Image (tube, rainbow, N blue to C red; front, side, top):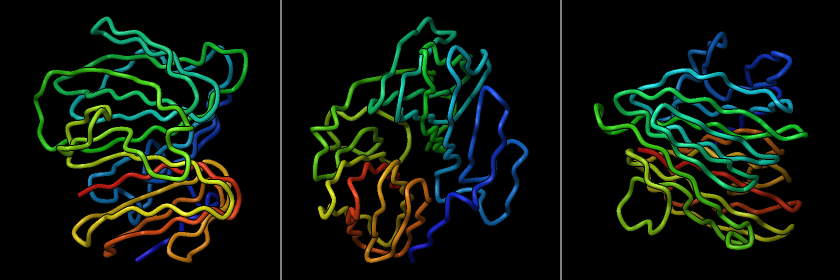
Length: 232
């Protein structure tokens, strides 16, 4: 099963400093058909204006992955962590028993990012945060695991869920495959470039929900950058 969810069909709101699109029910957007996809609970497509951002606020028991598409985001939290994550790089916050954090665009240009929430396998762990660069050249023509809670996924950022976040950059005409398994689900978005998933066409920033497939093949119609979440 492959279901394309066009960007134009997403929920969202423009708050001035934040233009947010929601792939799943979030804040004031409610759609009973789009509450979660397996353990994937939130996929927000955010544009944050320069020198603005999310003021300090709390979370608990959620794995929150931020994939920066353009610009950079500056993180600070109640554990004393601070860091700046640039375009193409990833940060992970495991909210655990509770954490207060802020995410600000301290740049002179808009920052665009995906904020992805995954329900953890267990609750009550200590909170944590981490970030690392993932050069796009390392993802050229193939999927690379960016964050994972699955054993054997190497130096990916750790998350506390039976899930992985992977990315690829494809030139027009290139393909990349990913084995999912019929007992799992996947959700992917091309940040730019038109793609086909097992022959099904999707435009940039469309959501593609996938289930009951052993393997998918993603073909780039244009030069494309792809983010995929694979969950139980």
